Image (cartoon, rainbow, N blue to C red; front, side):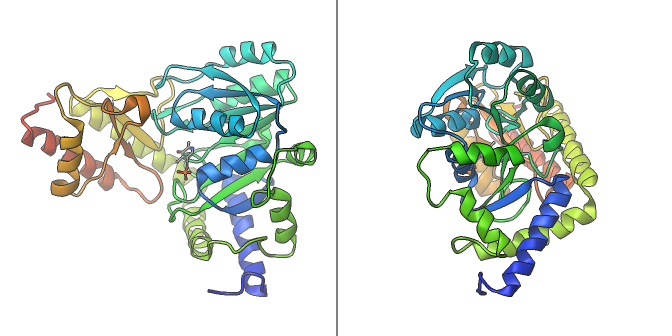
Length: 341
Ligand SMILES: *Cc1c(COP(=O)(O)O)cnc(C)c1O
């Protein structure tokens, strides 16, 4: 424990914010919140919107849908653009919806839909929004920022949300928000209720070198160390490593005779999904992998339950980790009498 309102924190915090900005390549303000990724999304929404505001969101998976649901829970009027789970939203489809929603106050996008291992073409989507609307542009980059590029100024993004436990490779407990200048004009008009998540509180506390409320100090320390490693590897190096690991994962899926799920046009650099082979009991396979092969694969969520398995490869991951996961998977399937070849 240290005095989070003392001079040590002022130095740590300003260094941490500078490192985050340097790695991401932005001058946008940073807000550090003691919460999970979902809390970060909620914080973004309640500082931008008022009840009744028209909002456009994308339902292309669990997390895009969740972003819409949070806005609805606070009384926003959400127009949801639904895309088949496992596919990416097309810029033309978004353009059509935008043209039908002239009073749209905010657009909610997801960079990497973790539940379907699919990336959305964010650069093109942002261009469509910026060409045809003054709406506030919010991006859920919880499982992508830190692992792939997101030039937020160049793409005209107003709020980016990420979470400590994903590409940053530290324990869960902190959401990091990147805020454009435009964000603050939305903030001054937004009437949704907020207290803990009022970002003005974080801004004014940060000016004094502190936090408005007691922060999760272990995560602050851990993130500071993680960023030193990441800056040493360089952003380009970190992004290239994730691309390499994702290519390896996709080639291992193919080599083991499994069928890849999602991300056909834009595969994810941070998570790879595969269809469960016919006749395989998901629970039996996942339990066997965990108890006998020391390997934990993520199951499908919601409508994808029992249909797919997912392997995350983000943060402190190397080729060897990906190879071992697939070695285990192939072995477990063989032991179960299922030859995928
Ligand atoms: C993990 C994740 C979230 C939710 O984060 P929590 O920390 O579990 O609240 C939101 N969006 C995306 C894209 C994610 O991958």
